[in-house]
Image (cartoon, rainbow, N blue to C red):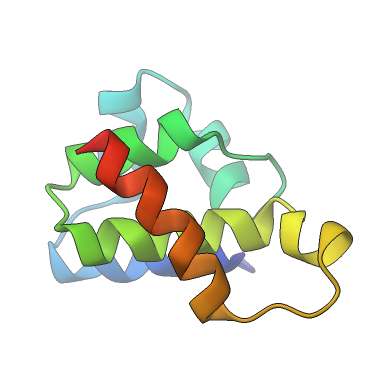
Length: 102
């Protein structure tokens, strides 16, 4: 399976915590297929879903921020709306959302 940025980040965390993908689908109350599609960047992921996953996995702010950055990249915001961008710029944007969420 080819993962998008978000899928790669979440998969690393799941492996570190010795969890499977279905752990997320159970807590999010969605199908395993939906989670798989998020991981493969075949579905756009909402900010609320990223926050829910961060909470389910008990992530610290820095790891939560990494998920938000990965989701932004997968959703195409960077690709289609901003020509020259780097992770630091995205990080500044995500800081705002993570601080509001916490």
